[in-house]
View 1 (spheres, rainbow, N blue to C red):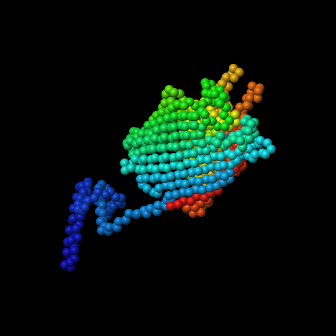
View 2 (cartoon, rainbow, N blue to C red):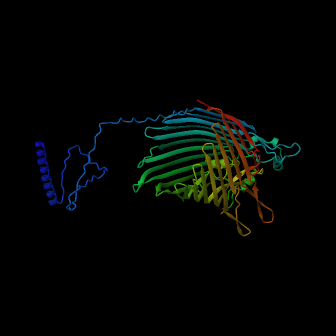
View 3 (tube, rainbow, N blue to C red):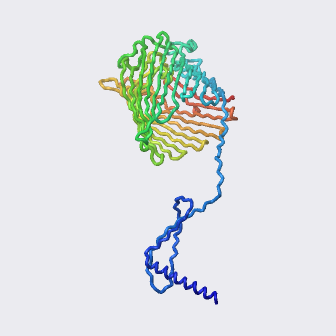
Length: 616
């Protein structure tokens, strides 16, 4: 009974207290409650579910809804667990590939054709490299067979060629990031003016082949060259860089020919930014070429007619001629800038040339130097437009590389050209590359050849310089299947128009253009089987070339053409191990007796067998 009374008192007190709270709630529009939480504070806003517990009143009296505002303060549970750190991974580099000091290649083929090559190179070094290379390739075969009963029109005797090159080279990088380079070499190029048959020799000079000495119509070009260079390897932006090279070449040949050449080539470049976002590099390229020629007129090849030579001396209006012994020079200044702008690759500049080669006085010439390219469709298509030009010397050293059967003391000129072109490149995939291009060129004093009439055997050529326009249309297709197969198809088509004319029957008639084909094409396939067997086959086609003009006595000229040249070459190499391999090479598998130049037939097929060996 005592406990029940106490319980009743507590219940009454609770009801009274609830009534006071309800009355206070009815008199206030806002419920405020402040909760202070003391802990380490770190302001973090995290996602949470809103807690909304609405009070329920069981009283029958209707109540007005009240606005309830409150703040929820999150509390982060601090963990005492500390995860262990992950150690940095160390990439182990692959072992350096073993290098070999010496490389030797030996071979021998039909037509008594030896081959020998030797290379020595220093081993891996961070700041220097040096070495020696030596190569010899020759052939001593005979074209045609002599006829015991008559003088054969198909026997040209021995038609040799020989090339020997010995060069020493070296490079050194200083602590100041300068690269110093030097090389010195000697080259010998030997051949003969073999472009006459037994019947021609007998008809012109009235003698058999056995009565002439081979040294009477030999050709030997010897070249000694020295090159020194220095350049900076620092390519940082806002850094000045430079490169300079000096070359000295002395060509001394049979029949008293000598040509001394000094070449100075260098550039200064500076990298910078445009509008604080486009990178650019400015260049100033400078070149100088000087040539000094000399000649002994008392030494000339077999069959030379001195009286006719004087009659065909260089005069105004005549194409063939002789060179004058004097000092010739060319100066080139080429400022340009390379930069990227809104996806465009831009090369813009100009070439200012001072021509002291063609005429005694210095004459200025200006050529464009601009290329603009742009890629589309994520580098699937690349389009470029170009306008370029320059002037280069047709020196004796350059002429004899194009046609070794040229006359001593041949006339030299500097060729000037302007080229305007467009190029479209399609990168269809990583395996397929397709390229199309077209060029329109204007060439002044472009080099070509015709027979020198002062040589009665018709086996010596003289340079011819024409001013012409040329349209060149071409393309290439390349397919690469990993490293096993590579297919390449390329070709060009040419259209020419000579700007030089002569007066005939009161009309201006174009000079004929000789030794310029109307097209060329090539198809090659390279197969690599597990780096063990490597084979390469190439098919080449060269369109017919005009080489002379025949007047039939009716006032009409007919042009004579060398037939279209077809060639199939094959080369196979078997690698026995890293040091030893064997190779087989066959040129002109179609056995076509084509002509390099008029009256100069080629070998029918040249086969070569050999091996290569590397020595540590």
